[in-house]
Length: 190
Image 1 (tube, rainbow, N blue to C red):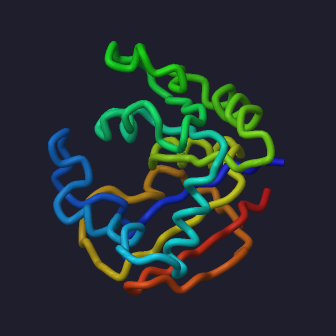
Image 2 (cartoon, rainbow, N blue to C red):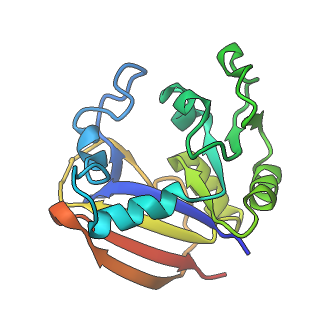
């Protein structure tokens, strides 16, 4: 059975984007440092294993704030798997010829449809607000945090708007990647 899994790169001080995020600077100042690890330029290694793992997911659920600044990933993020985009707005016209992309505002419905479409593969969850909403609603099964050895100092935090409720996690694995990145995987305990 598939699981919904957040894969997110994060600085040691909890930021997923640097300061001064704009449409022309979607990762903020210094934020591109968080995404250098998947592209080591060599075959093999722990980073490659984790990269291959999240690229083999069966469906994607993301927020429009992640999808649209990335140019919609050209309509195909993972070899044609369905992409469910959460938005309060209709799909932009530039997505009209992308049959894998589905816009809507129902988180529960998007997660249900993505799990159905993924079959026995996992559903990759993208975006901080989508992750926060899914975690709060009890719809996020696992978190894979790619902890990058950098302190950004400010920017956008991953777990900023969850409220005061404590959530317990069960550590599934810890992998030491190349370049100092540590891949931390947790199961959300209900």
